[in-house]
Length: 244
Image (cartoon, rainbow, N blue to C red; front, top):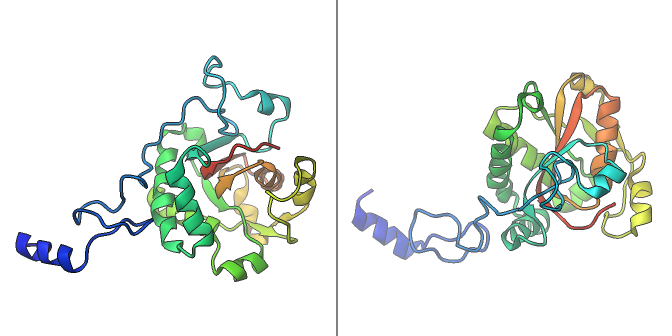
């Protein structure tokens, strides 16, 4: 494109940040300095739940909470912390509550790149499964953000994506009940679809936007393992600080 035409287009249609629509200085970047998230500094994290852990623990050793009460999933990859990474919070709020389904594509692509460093046992024949949204909540929101994220990861990595799980009953948001009732809130809330036979002996990556207590992901992993999955990992945009 000729420089003069490019300058004219910039003047008529200033490029804007994908997240906050702040005007940008040129046509090249798609994010302002606040909303770039790749890479984010995370520090030592638990390999099982991705919560921050002591730097004195070896990398392969789980945090104290996971050693005491292991969740059903065995691995968690995240882009960053929900409370410590302000740009991720804006991305998630836009995707989940702001009607910005378009944000799922770049977030999912970034999540997909996290898988590239995983060992072969987590990549060979891997299957992506979104944490399902209840139909009533999907109707209210207009789309299922976890499904959009999983499809974007699938495009990035060339992996199959299957909605293998279904919500069998409506549950209140996991941030609402106290810690003691979060497990009870999701117990029996998920089931397998009939086409989930393809799970057998395959590693499965659950895909969701935020990992909060881990109760929902653990219940989903329990159902997937019962359905024949070889192992279950969790792929999330952000990790909140609250635990089961």
